[in-house]
Image (cartoon, rainbow, N blue to C red; front, side, top):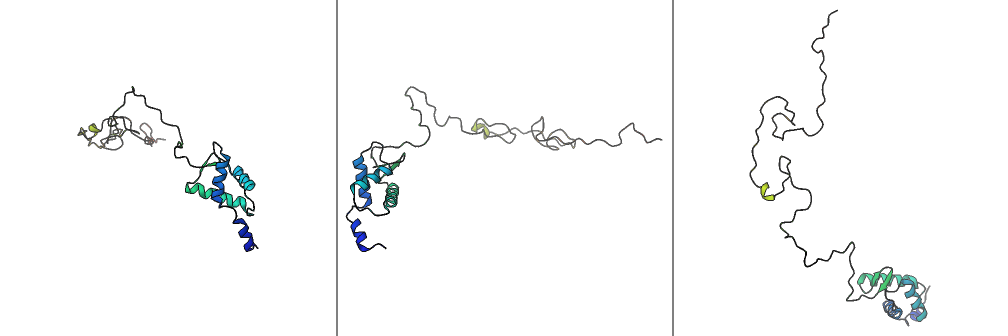
Length: 179
């Protein structure tokens, strides 16, 4: 068990955040200093470090990173530079040339798939979508006309989906049961 004197002998050293900042300043590396170089500097400069030095160093480095006192970039720690702007992920946008024509935001083609009207046709112009639609003739016959249903008002042509199964006729014409 550690005695009271063990804690006092560690009091001669400054707090860990101060030792870390001093190590980064003294090492003065362009891209920052890694944890190993910070630890070696602290061990060489300060005496009577606690037994859990590496754990305490890791804890204080993480805390200083989360509070913004240090920046962690490419496995190195550095002091934040007020003029430093870190670029986000992905490809940067292309620079716009002054002579290039620009399209107004309202006339640009909308993203995604074009909207369809109730008959399945593409709506290219939003103004045309609000125009009144032509009425189609509605079939009232009871025969199968090749469309989806009897008397439906769908577009002519091939119906959607799988065609109905053809049922063979039983007892066709010309066959007799004479014997």
